[in-house]
Length: 593
Image 1 (cartoon, helix red, strand yellow):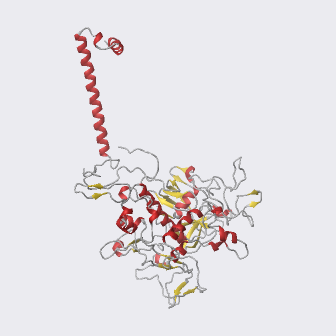
Image 2 (tube, rainbow, N blue to C red; image 1 turned 30 degrees about the vertical axis):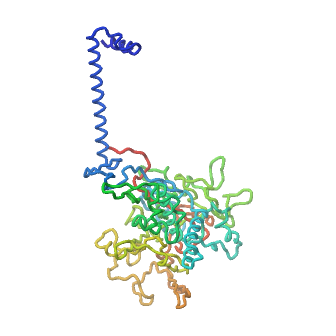
Image 3 (cartoon, rainbow, N blue to C red; image 1 turned 180 degrees about the vertical axis):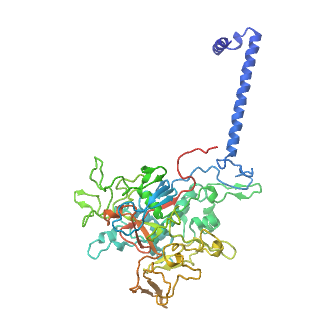
C-alpha cells in the first residue's frame, strides 16, 4: 500500500487527481486518509498556539499587557495603569562604554613602598555601570560654557557669578620659575587643544558639568521620542529651560510652562474612554528617562581602570595587576611598537616626553585623548595624561567591614522643598542662592528651573536602621563620633579650640573663613593655628591615576590621593559615569520558564 501511495503522489503531481482514479472505492479511501492528516495537523498547530499564549501570559514583563498578579489590562486604551512592557535594556549613553560589574580586590596589591597603609587590599563588589571612554575634553567643556553664557548672559549682573563659577581656572598653568603663558592663554579654547583633557576644573565644577550633561542628553532623548518639541533646546532661556528632576516631578513647569514646547512633540497623546489625554509626559515607567551622569566612585574607577576581564579566579577578579595594561612594565613588548611608552607620564627628572625626534610618550604636557591603546574595557588613559576626580570624600581607610557593596563615602541625602500647597518649589531667576567657597570663589547653589532641595530630616530618618542623618561623610571614619565612646548628647561641632574638650583630633584640618562687611567687601581670614594635625576634612576629595606630571609610581590604579574639592590644578581632569539599570550583563540569556 505504501508503494502504491508513493507512486500515486508522483502521478497526480504531474497529471492530476481525477484522471487516474478509476475506482470510486480507492478514491474514497485516499480522500479519507488525507482529511484525517489535515485534522491531525490542525490540532497540532492549535496546541502549539495555545501553549505559546499560556507561556507568554505567564511571564512577568516579557511584553505582556496583562498584569500577572491581578489579570487587569496594562496600557489599555481606556486608561488605567500605563507601563513600558516592551523595554529590553538600557541604551548605552553617548560617549560611554559598558563596564560589567563583579567582585574584585580593591586596594594596593603591589609593594607599599611608602608604608602609609592607605587603601589596603579589601574585597568589593561593583554593580555594572557605564563610563566615559575618554576624559572630558576641552571641546566638551566649552560647549557647557557656551550654553551657560547663552542662557545666563554674564553681561546681566544677576547672572555674572553663574558664568564665573563654571569657567576653568586657566592660571593653574603658571609657574614661578617656568614660562607657561602659552598654555594659560590657549589651552582651554584653542582648537589645537580641543581634543585634550580639560584641566583647571575643581571637583565642584566637574559635578555641575555632569548634572548639566544629564539634562542635555535627557532633553535630546525626549525630543527623539516625541515628548518635546524638536530643537526645543534652541529656545531655552534663563526663565524657561529643561531640568530632568523638574520634568519628572512637575513636567508642566518645565520650560517655564511653555506648552508649545512641552506638548509640541510628534507623539500624539492617547485618549481614555472619557476623552481625557493620557501618556502626555514621559515618566520613569516609560523607560525613556535614564539615570544621571555623575562622577564615578573610587571603587568604580579603580575597578574600571584595572580592566580585569582576563584575570578570573572562579567567580572573583583577584586583581594582581600593576597597570591598566597587562605586564609589569610601562613600555610595549609588541614587536612593531616595542619600547614605546604605554601612557603619558614623567619618566624622570626633567624628562616629560623624551628627546626630540624620538619621543618616549609623544607628549610633554597632556596628550590628545585616544593617543594610547585602551584597556580591556575600551577605556583610554586610565593611567597617565591627567589624574581624575572621583566622587568620594577622602579618608585613609576604606571601611569594608561595614560595607562591601558599591562602596562610597560621601552620601548627603536631600529632599525636594515643597510649597505650602504641596507642589515642589522651582528656583526662579530672582531666587538664585550663591555659596562662597573657602578660597573666595562664588558659585550658584541652584540654577533657575531646578528644584530647590534641603537635607532630609526626622520624617525620613525616624526609626530607620539603614541611615539616621542627612550627612554621612563622617560615618565610621575614626573620629570620636564614630567610636564606641560616642553618646547621643555629644556635639561634634565645637565653638572654639580653647573650650573644646572633645574636639576631633583626627581630622582637625585648617578652618579658613570668608565674611562680608557692611559694604559687601569680602574679608578673607586664613587659619594661622599651629595646632592643626591634618589636612583632611569633609571637603577634600579623592583623585585617582597618574598624570603627565607624575612618576611611574602613581600609575597604579590602586594609588589614591586627595585635594580640596574647591581647588583646581593643571594635572587633574575628570570623566563621567552612569549607573546601569536592569540586568547585570548584556548577554542575551533567555528567560527560564
